[in-house]
Length: 169
Figure (cartoon, helix red, strand yellow):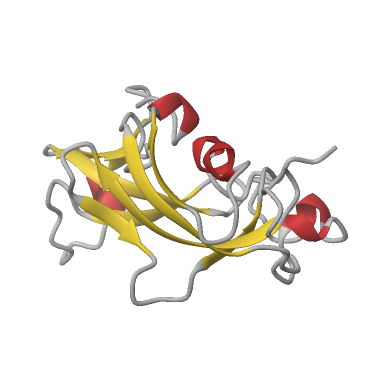
């Protein structure tokens, strides 16, 4: 019989992520299971906590509130960009997703929230911020090696490409 999953274990899961109304926003169906090291900041806290104590082959459905997911929406997370900074031939429409860069040069996904004569207002909240999420999770494998170059390798450290999501001790 397999051991219960604990913090620091590397596992693979099959999952389907849904909104409370049942609409699917992500799934491993048709792809390889998601491999990650539990409780290292690779995934949202609520997902990490959901798999702790589970065993290989076990399935469950978990509801994750925003505070354990992508956080609440931050109405201050809007960026005004002069319309002149966009190419003239670019079709700007509300809801269009674009990549911005933060001051460190890292990509930041953003959506056009509004457009006026002089400015384009970009919303830089994660698209799942403020949402309660429902995940169907099945443990596919346990006792795996951490993914190469991941935070879970401990040798990579916080400068190993984890984009600041690592928990460095």
